Image (cartoon, rainbow, N blue to C red; front, top):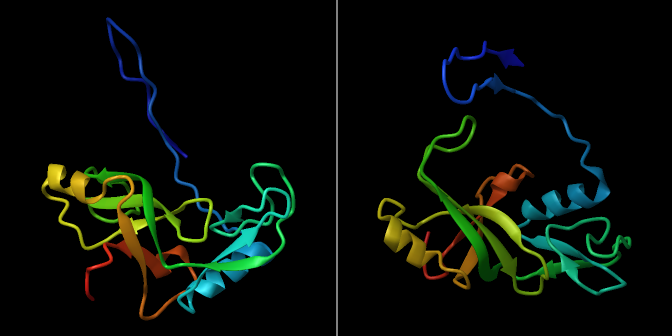
Length: 163
């Protein structure tokens, strides 16, 4: 953690700035490992909750609604609808150079949304980009040619976009 001294001020609020730079090594567990492994095969897998019967994507080992352990693996479609999106125009360390878009997409056959980058849309015209990413817009999952077993293996595009 890097710390700087409070900025001297005579009037108004005082600020104390901190920068945190943390690295994590996560134990993936059985469920996340299988979900990420399926990405290398061009598949999106969810898990079904036996209590409420929702299909959770990305796959989770327990249901976030009723805390029941999930059971069956379910392969969902590689197409779905945008539930929420954001377009980032300011730089953030260790993220792509802006502009870029992120969307939460509920894939056909899933009951929860999967987050991912959106590619293939001109983001320089903000109004047109917002129209292109409107809630309910159908997008398709695309997969990396050389997958690595991480969330970077997939992204979303408008379905009519050709590689």
